[in-house]
Structure formats: C-alpha cells, structure tokens
Length: 422
Image (cartoon, rainbow, N blue to C red; front, side, top):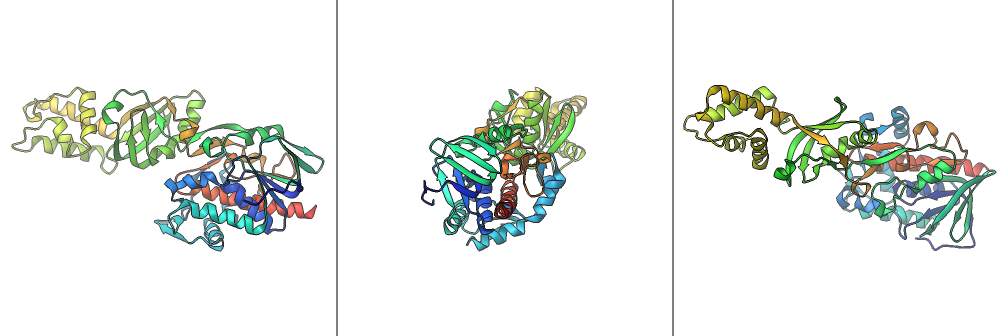
C-alpha cells in the first residue's frame, strides 16, 4: 500500500474500511478530484475479497432481479443498481486490467483467481496516490462543524466527507468486526440487529447422524410460525449439525431473523423436486410389485435416492426388513404413503445458525430509510455508507459484491462531488 505520511492528516474524503466497497469508493472519489485517505485496521486491504467464490471470485451476475437482494427498501436498491449496473462493474474491472468470463451469467475474473480483483483495486489506489493508514485503530469518529474528526490511537485525521464501508459481522477474521455499527450509532443512526446470512442452519434432529456427509439435489422450503417465507432448489448438504449448501444459504437470512425474534423456524426437504408425489408413488409401487422382486423398502428406495437417505427413511418409519411383496396390500399402501411423505416433505426443526465466523454475509445494519440515492446519510450531512454495513444482503451468485461495487462507486462519486464543492 501507499506509504503512510504522518505529516498529512486532512483530506476531502476519508473512507473507513478497505474492503470491496471501501476500495471502490476510494477510487471513485479520487477519480472525481478528491484527496482521499483510507483507514483500515487490517495490515492488508481487501482481505475478504480473496475468499469469495471459493477463491475464484464470482464478482457479479447478469441476472439482476429485485428478489436477488433483501433489504428494508427494495425500490431504492433497484434504483441504485441501475446507476451502477453489472455491466458497469464489468467495464470498471476491464479498465483496471481484469478480463472477465461468464458461466451461465455468473462472472468471474478470467484467471479464475479472486486475487486478480483485489490486486487490481489496490494497484489502482496506488496509481491514484490514495493515502492508506493500515493497522489503524479508531478510537472515535465525530462531526465538528463541517468536518469529520477521526481519532486513531496515534493521530487525528480530518475530512469534510466520511464514508463508512466497514462491513458487517460475517467472517470477522477478514476484518468485519461490527465496529462500523458503533460509529454509526454514535453519529445518530439506528442499526437493525446484524445477523449471520448465507450460513448453514442447525437442527437437533437425531436422524442427521444417519445422513451426515450426503450431498443431493433437493428443494428446501423455510416456514416461520407455519407460514412459508422462502424456498430454493440445488445441492443440499446434510451434516451432523443440520443443513448446508447453496439452497440453504439462500433461505438462511430469514431463519436468522425468525430465530432472533423467538419465532418457530422449520425447513421442509423435498428429496425429489423433479417429480410430484403421485409420480413418485407410482414408481415405488411398480418397483415393489415387479415380478421376481424380493426386495425390502430400503433396497427399493436405493433405486431412487442415496442409500443413506433410504436407510434414514426406513428407520424413521420403522419399516420391516422383509420383502414388500410378502406384505398385505393394506400395509403396503400405508407404508408407501409414509415413504412418499418423507421423500417429498421431510420436516426439520431449525434451532439456530452457524456463527458469524461461518457466514458469508450479514443481514441487518443501517436501514436504507436513513440514506438517500447518493448514499449520503439523511441524518448527518457529509456521512456516506457503502457495502455490507447497510441493511442489504444478496443471495449467492455475485450479488453481494455487486452491491459493494454499486454502493462504493456511488458513495465515492457523490462524496467527492460534495467535498470538492466545499
């Protein structure tokens, strides 16, 4: 990073946080004529970017439906994403020297390495001469007159505009320690309780010991107090502690919010999302009645789903190990009905989520009603927000990084415009 210059303590814009949103904000502000300082408590910048997309960095997506983002003001999010779109993100990184590639509309750096994105951002801040204060511990941020005064343990920094891009609480080892919420609250903002999102779900169901380690295509549907809140289909992971995998991540923020509010959360698993109940029942009945078949239910089910899932269903329903063809027709029909119900609607009581350490993003934060379309605070003139500190969280697929690029670029651009007018 740029060498620290202890003689310089003032700037037009100070950005707090050097993650995806903060680096983008700093670049945008500098390119629009502002003298910029970035404060980061990590020794290096952009650390969290390196872990995105399993190190491959899915950094945007051409599908930009409103349902891809969750917030307290979806209309504002949609409006902001039109001002700096996924196409703008591609052009931005192309200009910084990063060629992208698409996989079904999911965009990655052509190199397949997240470091390409992080390194390009840092290289651009160096080219622009942006001053960095890494390993800086902030002890307070206050507004005095028209200026923000940011006190670190070693010095005082001042600027006319301040951008808080400190992230949330997810993956704290990368620097997201929730400190930005405290700064915002002391400046007069409210904070919607931050919770883990894109995170595995916990359950105390005893049958998970029978299926741990299984990956299978399934549909998961989350209900809160009996009302359906969200669903998704994809590769489900069954673990000793509960549920994981992308479809679980997609619904997890609603489970986090429900459990935080002492509500009842339950997930229904459909192990055969491609077939309805009637079709499934016909298939199993035919397999059971096939001439010469001496199979029990567990063996029959193994032709339809993973053997561990077949075993779990038979154990839960206490099904006999004898040949199905030897059973009375009435028993066969009763058992078949229970099997289909388990295949299509296995209920899982959710007792919690994994911790923030295992979460990819945060839900909650600064409510959007407290900012305007320039990312500026409605309560504190000159204060801007960008990235995960705001109450916006996207689904898996590059949406959280797109939010970082959009909010960072807009906050930096508008903060520079305001700072250079002063």
